[in-house]
Length: 365
Image 1 (cartoon, rainbow, N blue to C red):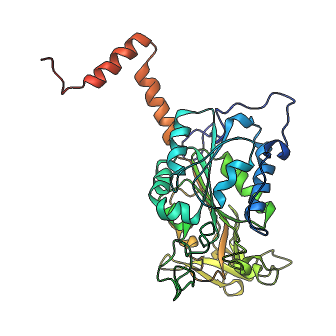
Image 2 (image 1 turned 30 degrees about the vertical axis):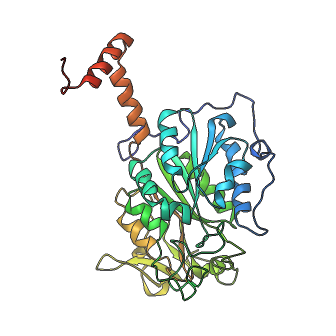
């Protein structure tokens, strides 16, 4: 079976041992005996429950699931899941996960990281994991602040943010994690919200099923050091106008919904210059409204949509799967190279390895 991209259709869990027939796991099976220690009201609790809830749906064995984290509040994750895991080095979780995913096809590898961990010291490691398309699922918790180290501005904090390290307001222009991932041509890029359990679970499930690097940015509230950063997209009074929902194959509209058409009162259109613009639905023909195509091999439109995210206080943001395409994965191709080099005869493989080590620049004295 192949897709319209001409590549074999593979699930992210292919090659990972599945449960025996009749065997079933629940969220409780993925819950460790460790006391969960985040601040009261932290959005991490909701994400943890969602992850523990969707892991049984993967139908794979717990001993073949691995969570690698870096440093930060989110990086406590491996302690709270009854799977294998590693609380690793600041910013380096994608690199460690790359080695693990490449060496062990029988493991389903997750990375849990935060906006400071992934986008500051870990920025280089993140973009290369995305570029290589290693088969792993990256959960990027974005609370737009450094929480563990007590409230310094982070790479996603808005310009002018007053914190302990920016008492007169941050001078930095923030990263847009989705734009960054699309710029690195990641094959699966999505954004979701900690408080929307249904949407969070559906996006995480799609990300885990994807073959290649999946990046899911999760808007996650920090009630201690950045409380209210996402109020506009969470409040029942404002979220209809703040959230631009992205659903593959559907017209992109938002705002209060019309009972007859199901469309919001605002829509995205492509202008004559190729830009993406927000307009009132009443001012354009239905066929002019942009239809979301997450499977478009060209990431340009997805990138343009990602730029509609407010860089300051968050009043508006596209939410959903921006891009979901297939491309050969680094780890699949690396393993194929190794098999080719080894050949069918172990003796020949040993001779070829020695020839490779000797190369053309060695000689006998």
